[in-house]
Figure 1 (spheres, rainbow, N blue to C red):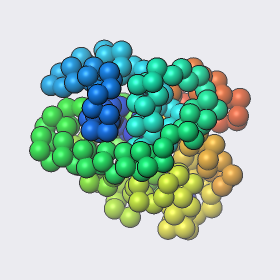
Figure 2: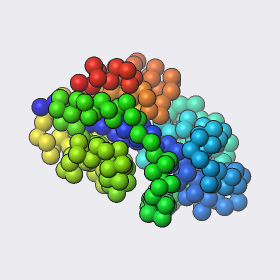
Figure 3: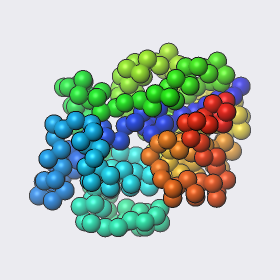
Figure 4: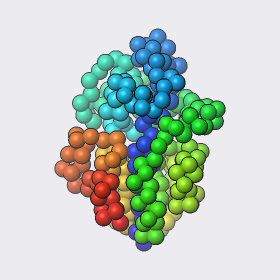
Length: 259
């Protein structure tokens, strides 16, 4: 049985604008006097295109490939607020290690409270920030019978369920094949839980993620790792992925590479 395990953000959902907006709202509650907080306030109420054109958003997205979970959005914003230049994973790891662990823990908790508030108080505005990668959605629908589809994601389940329904693909991902943020702090935990639940060999699992560090994390399990080139990565991550033996896949190649 072939299994296709998919990350959600950056693979199925073009979620960076929502993550950015929730992250800056969360950051503002921790550092209300920061210049970044003042600049981020000018983005409130703007449409999706205006947010994407913001230099602050661009800088945030450039750091996204180096993080792991929601707390790292806070680390990214702290880095930007201090005007620190981070060039690679090693520099990111050094910077993150110096950040107060209490800030990291509290940011993680408050981020999800902020997301829930936005999602529940203004669901239409929330959904407007989260477009799907439509060609990939269409491919999953077309090839749904050619493998077992699963999700391995750090996203919260209520948001996943709402978005799967909005994208009209909730039927492709039964509840027992959704491994959300509660599965663990790294994708290795997600795939271990998935493998145990499905009782399949690791080498029968293809894992698609837009973050190179996630692929590196799960590589010792023996799964096939594929970098989603349409997600939040750039030439730096794609080159390193190829050098480290991972397949780099664009949307145009996805049908052949993944199925």
